[in-house]
Length: 146
Image (cartoon, rainbow, N blue to C red; front, side):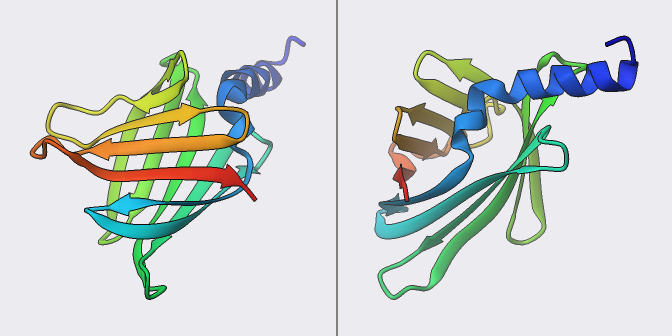
């Protein structure tokens, strides 16, 4: 394989491999700002498989949507690392490097930004969001494959 375009694609696919297990449909429960919520988390490969789209919706006890976001994961060849671009309400967008950990991964955000950490097992995905101005976890969700 000497074609630079093909080599780039192969490297991008390989770089995404550590989080490819996310692909599928997940359902879960947790809390968002001290309120109980239910969640759906659907991850699918896009284009040639070098992007992963993660779509999450959280609903309250009345079934009302309290949070919806879309995250696009890719392997950034220039930085030689995973990267996420998150889009959500009010035209908000954030881009962050993703660091693999012994039990999952975390988004590397600045000191004034929310801290996201994902802990993964074979059939469970748990994540927490801690805001810089808060002592307690703002959002905590546990998902299982459905």
